[in-house]
Image (cartoon, rainbow, N blue to C red; front, side, top):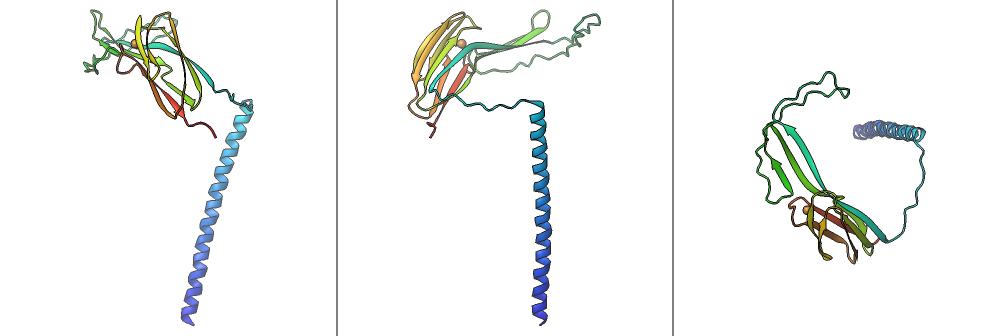
Length: 202
Ligand SMILES: [Cu+2]
């Protein structure tokens, strides 16, 4: 009799605890759903949402520019300019890093000149990452914008020179998923890009 009563009490207590937990879970879910709904409503109120039907074309064209990113600074603290319309704040001094960079002329660190100015240059492609599908016919227009001369290889396609102001175009078809790399022989290690080929859509 006592054993039966104990089992009954345990069952009732367990049910109560579970009930509370389920209730708490429902509350949390309700709050998160409400939160999402609020966000969605706000977004809708502030923006015009349109439905876009993506192109089904398997012909993909990209323009790839040669680029160098430059960061210039000085070892001296800048001087505040009180009468400049731009209200330029004084630039903090930056010590020259004396970093040993990887081999190749794609990364250039120029030490301070007579005025204390030094800079960092990094060559790259814009864009340096492209996504296509298996079976796509891909056209790449390489455009020489920065840097007077480049020697570029597109893996499996070919190697060609590219001077500033010139365009070199390659077209190929992707037969398998995977990665196709394009890079410049003059500006390693960072003037490199990848074409990610995704499996053919079902
Ligand atoms: Cu280059």
